[in-house]
Length: 402
Image 1 (tube, one colour):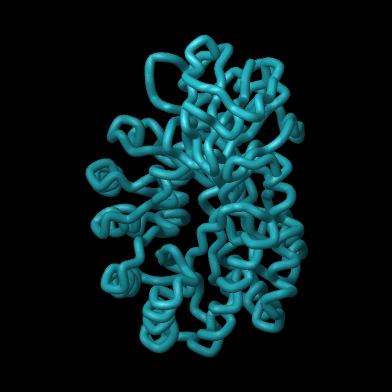
Image 2 (image 1 turned 120 degrees about the vertical axis):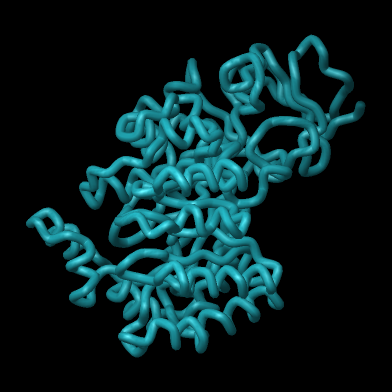
């Protein structure tokens, strides 16, 4: 075989399930052709040559990290709510008084796509410095036809400016805007459903999400959104069972959803439905931590049902002001009981699965896009153990050093 580039003398955490932890290959190598991994395996089995051979000097290489749930595109500030929560107010009460999502909506509606993209790029940089190659970005802070489209355009712009893969998600059903107070059904009909059809035609969104909760949208309203999304050819995901058991996980699994996210209150029926449908459970420990919740996701039951578990930052200005995917992985282990291997899989292989990208990224194997992170660590566990450390040596995205 003739490669464009061979990375030699590396230790590979391929994250391919198998006999070794992390799918590890000691003294390994990776052959890259174009933007793809053409071969990966032990150094003494390299099946060809390349114009460029690079000695990794024993560094670990993982798939580039995947943050499969963020709200990076927004304007405004909600640090005052942090102080209020510390003083004892809960998130639901703050939201009912016009805070929470609605406060961010006011600021975001006044911002243009360029301003929104600039703010998101600054937050994206923190993720890039920790090895991220793919980031999902949701809308949901505009809640009008035009402002939701502006957010999605900003998300696409972030991808062009950063060189990273962006998965854009329409989350128009994030909250009921003030002008539709008491008329959530009308908001679904007049704003959300037309937006679904439009973004499907224009390619501005890759999936449709909703917030199914007592302070947001009912299961019946969410079902209507999912029916429209499926008719438009867009996959669905859901903010499910975060603050109460609404049956959200079961609902999104019924539609073959990519993921059910948060899932602190998901019941046995929801877990079984997720396992049967292959719906990924996305754990968001940053929100759990920031809201000082006590109801943990049912990790043991999810494992037993064979539900894939991803981990993400849920980066947003209020309930999860977190732009460190490695810290999210640490929290998932410390707070939710994941193993280190599960956590790393959650920010690589399973994060990719939660975005419907498992065939493209998330593991180191032939045919996948050559999105890689190179680390100055002795063991993969260091990536999760340390808080605040950034041991990234460099990223290769699409076969090129970035």
